Image 1: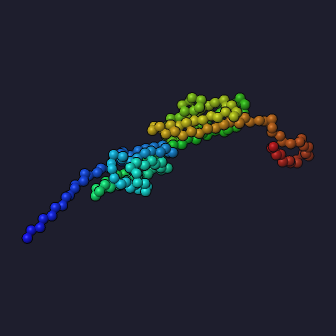
Image 2: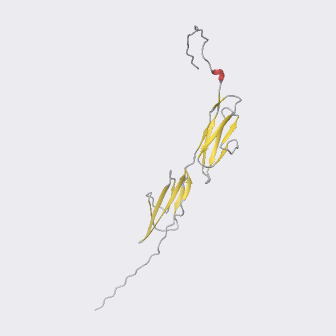
Image 3: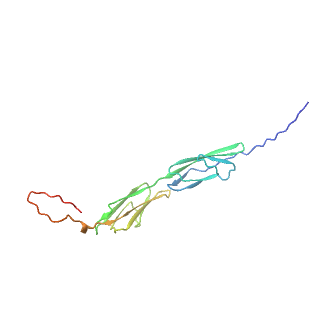
Length: 178
């Protein structure tokens, strides 16, 4: 007695998931990651299920994805590094007419550019009241940060110590500036 049965075995092609090289972005930017060339069911560590996703991490984050097609499965991950850049102007924002003011900028590594066109980290100016002066710091990778300052002119005509006073020799008085 002989019995014969046939079975077809389909060998699927291996799948490869390539999310690409790690990426550096500027703080606040978003980036698309994924692999649209692979067919299958995607599962990202973010819970998303599309072949490509848009992310905007606030700090350096590693994203991983698994794609399944039949019995085949592939995994990959990509790290998005977030470049934080900052700049701060140090200066007194009140000035006396005719005086100069020195503005000093400090921040992360990069090149400085003031609204006046100067490209040093500090400038000396003859400030103008209610004019905004700004500095932009640009990192080597193109990320930017900006700070600004607006000056107010000191009005010495509004300073008063009050009424004239008479006191006896050896006496004292407290004066209040208003």
